[in-house]
Length: 393
Ligand SMILES: [Zn+2]
Image 1 (cartoon, rainbow, N blue to C red):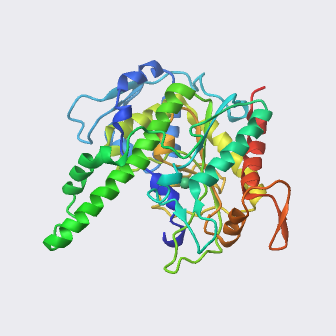
Image 2: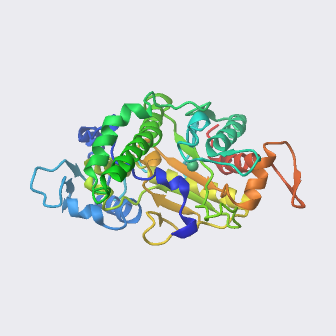
Image 3: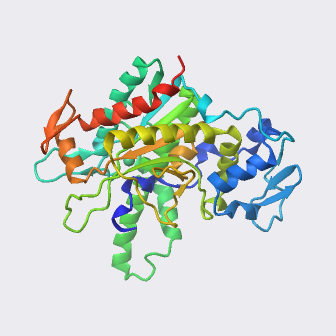
């Protein structure tokens, strides 16, 4: 995907996690809450447009069974009985969505961890750019605005400390095992293999820490403590650097809802379970309504064009909105209820970089002859405006 490959999207699809081990019995409460037609529509249009899950399913007139393997030899993991009603009573129409408790999840850890996370860059003696700091700045501004509009607002983090209590060294053994299982370095001469192995083990342990463990810890905090009506993940995007680390002219906006489980991901039973949970908890209609409202508000405020994804990108459109895509990200898979994931701006765009260097300020300042809000306020104001009609009073 060349330059449009998005750094932030390495967050995607990182296996199941022990913290949320597969417990299909939790789905019993959803028996007969969804009609077959509605189940199939959500499956084929949102959660698995590729049809990959169907290999693991057996339908009868009034039920569907899901199996661990495509051979379907062992007993099913779960059997869901459909409701006979044409449409289910628990479904809310998008216009009825209202939120009181809103969680803001500022992306990444930052601070001492920013370089490890690869969410850090600097040019000469300019102010270094840490995405986590930008996201936290926006979260704080947005919290004030949403509270003024009557919402209860919760941040998943207030500083640059990890939410997880694990550290990279806790994943040393797991990482060694995983790297040993790969054949990547088998053809290397011994000394090279030893060096590459040690580096890969360290990198992998860090990745498990700052990505899977951190995201799972935030999901646990959201699911068990905060229990919001809606979660907004705040990020700023970036594109891959060219060889000379030049700032780019391209600058875009994308908004994600949850969905589009890939065939490779669905081999994992934890992923199958989350797909079922997401269909049955009915987060999609509200998630889509919020995503569309926020995409419209952000597009209006930033004038950014949409990101364009190819057919093998892991992202698919779920409606006519050019900015809204479904993607199976760990951050929206592990969190219960509607989750909308925002990725406006490319941090390494020339103008965005200039605005980040200016920091936060009130009112307008001239940027290349154009009066502009601080980039943080432009972002926070747009999200607050997009949500304003959806806050319960
Ligand atoms: Zn990010």
